[in-house]
Image (cartoon, rainbow, N blue to C red; front, side):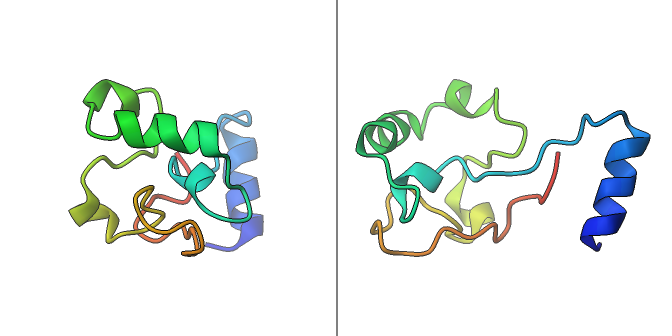
Length: 86
């Protein structure tokens, strides 16, 4: 959908739509943050780490390596298989 359609839908649900920021984004440029990335990597295989994030996908098979926190930091972080909004 277009940005306008997303905005209209978000308005219809009183602004409760959450735009996805992949949970692994602190492990990639330009949003790289070493401390956050280390925390993400240490907790990646723990289901409770993903539960609070409505767009997080724990299994890399379903992510299709989109914004994988274990990829090199220079690898682009893309929405890929993540949902656009939750």
